[in-house]
Image 1: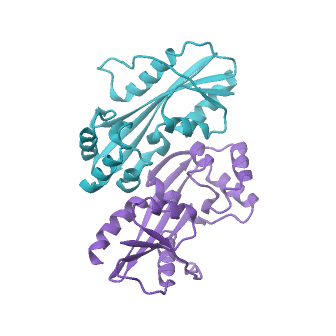
Image 2 (image 1 turned 180 degrees about the vertical axis):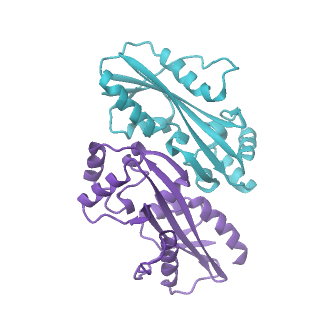
Length: 189
Length: 189
């Protein structure tokens, strides 16, 4: 089996590479636009499906295309990647002392079928001090991340009190669920 | 402030070093023996206290000694580090498809006081195949770990369905709680 990962996220690339299955990285160019009325929890699987449809090369019999999208949602509102350090700090202040949800939608596609699923993890942040927030924002690692934080970064280590669900889902890929669904799909190949 | 970490665990050393506070590693030599009737959830804090008592050098006013112990418990029974690959495989089979608890006890000690706490995380493993178990056991990374697994290893990535609590607590140090307790202790120094 060979996995084709259509994602530029360095975190997703690293996580998938650790499964022990050969991975190649491919490019997909799609407009990531879905109807604004789409419920938050269906957005990431919708985007994962769009990305899968955008990959137009024929798949070899032993290839599985993997596409994914991660969304951070607080009180039913999606927090995307911040456009400025000020916006990043504001996002972190809104997450501080609250529980939010991280949804990752994944599409696995091979010649004989495809499967789409969404994994949800709830994340509870402690009350974050302005110093912790601004130190992290000034590091700059917040800028390419939905919700302006990485759970594997310093702010995740000191700020996240507890999670309910899959940790790697928050990093960007629900590896355990993906492995299970891949095993279910494999006999089809 | 300077942290003195009395632990040989490379994972604890790495996690504590990422807090952004200077850390030095110190040695403590104690018999890690506590009464066998001690309830499982009190064992790690009891051992952390023992280790703290075993550090007999005087502390400087800006120094905080950190000691810790992690215990993996399934159905009220402690799973220690495996003594053989066969025992490691048997432990992993017992964790497969079940929920177990990971307790880390931490003692923070400075000249003006000390604090002891325990953090618990529940970990739910999927049903693990014999191949997944034996591939991991044959890697050898299971041998220095309580419960014969690391949640940050391949088997944790593909095998752990969900957790409830702090992820880094399962790695070996509840960083977020430690940071909070350290901040509460700091004014004492």
